[in-house]
Image (cartoon, rainbow, N blue to C red; front, side, top):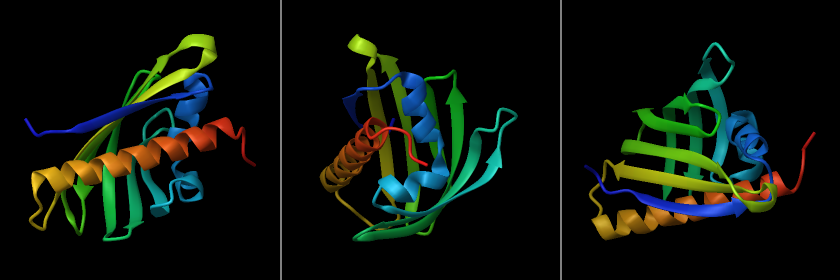
Length: 148
């Protein structure tokens, strides 16, 4: 089994509000930093994204990739790589759990494998940076309240 990196953060909002931001791919360029474009290519019968194309610019890593999403209940979403220019694999998930005072504990797990050779230690560090930035951006976006 491939090694993965995970981290958690507490967000002062209900799980449904947090998942609403996670599921709103069209708005990713507004709060993620690295995602410059997001396009939902396919949805399930509930209108949730099943396939999304993302254009990423994370400094050293620039990529145009497509991810397949799997929704488990109301509080978990996972994804796997469909196609990419730079990545061999990209598997991840957001898991939400209710916390004290109406808050939500968000756990982000990520496994990345790039097509270019890279030491495992450097890959784990890159995953940690991606996760920490994503969680901080998600927290800021959700806690700032509804956006028009």
